[in-house]
Length: 346
Image (cartoon, rainbow, N blue to C red; front, side, top):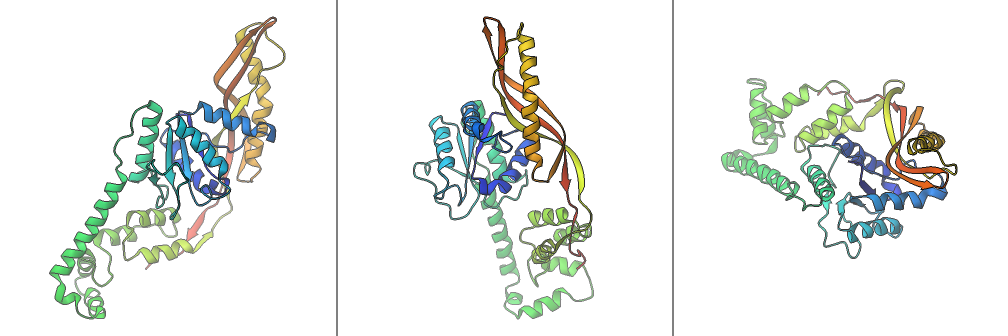
């Protein structure tokens, strides 16, 4: 699915890149203004992509709703006017611009990149429904969040009712009882099940003990899966102690960048020849786009290939001329650094 346009403020591109990567894994290849050609084509390319879009995602943040967010609001207004706008919110305390408050925005304020997150699933469903021209299905995110809070409240209620006398005692007594050397780790797990003595539950403890030493990704996954665990502070401290442990390595990947090739001045005899001429003429532009993406130092480009997705060919007195909208596939190597996040041993 390539006809999805993302409107955002440049200052938010790191967070938007995480969203783009997650959507790409869902089969959505959204258009965003990374790696556009030179200044003379910038606005024309954005407008062309916006006009071709069947779904416009607007990312509301402090930056995009602020005084410098005029372009974002203009793009969002065009998407809203066509009935294809899907708004998302990234920041707390964001006041939506005038005229956009009636559209229910998808809450991604607490999203950390998990594709199973119910709010992210709501976004994927809304995109598919908008592209298909149908109403979006009911949101699952708010109900999932409410259910989670009710579950936590229920556990707390059981703990309060069943262990009221014990809970009224000094907290140090709870800790000493839950950490007594006999019947461990079962005694600690039992305390954790009812949140006594600041002990983790059995599932939290077993998952924590299985974490590979120093694995930052495993720590992040644990934090997402066990947000209320007593071990959360320890996990956060390990994540904060993040250090590179090896030289960066280069991983092969394909980077797709939006490309528009205008008609060539010289007509060809046949339509296939005119298309071949347009692709050949686009090679230089594709190479420049890929080199621009590589300028950050995060990538090194091996080869650039222009790929057409929408052709426009016209007959002239001397033959045919063609233009196309498509992409530059940058075969590249991405720079990745291996990090270690503290010592996982308790």
